[in-house]
Image (cartoon, rainbow, N blue to C red; front, side, top):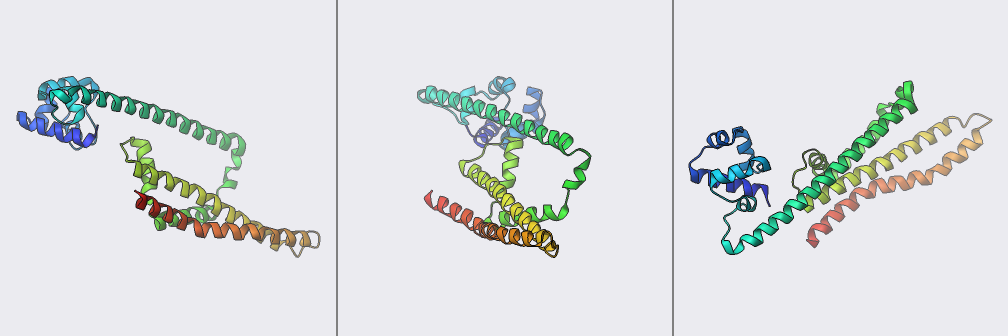
Length: 248
């Protein structure tokens, strides 16, 4: 059940009947903009007016959902396929609804932490340099690997719940994974650099000098490993995408 196919079929049937988009909209008591959205594949007719639309266009609901005229010998098969697709669409809508509930719960949890855990000291946790240190590398990695489209599409899919191909969903998932890993790695790099600088700064202090020096040196292997991950991670995602496309 493809929205674009259904839209083209509606447009064809409308023209066969000699109706304009406005005339068809008036018969259904809706706006011509809604009809335009059907015919461009941006949406499908609502179930409440689907039967009236079919009656006006002289087609069956099964043909409307199939996006084509159906011969009698194939009618039962098409009806079963459409029922299965409608059930799958309902299941996907339920999953999206559950995801939205979880997302809202997560946002409320973050707000609870900010209000009761941080309170009036929220300004202590706002630092533009730290944000830039994480966000700029994440942005560069998205641009270098070509996953920036997938990253934006992930939010567009979540908000609009449009039909997406498996390949687009995979790219969006990889883009989100790339940003999550990148933010953790660069955040850890920033933390390590700040800690080493702080310890080096306090090395002249006779009380803590030796301890600070030893700890700063001990942190360097972690710093090196994080830098290596930050460099190789974009290459990994690029090779993974290249391999997946060739496998297909």
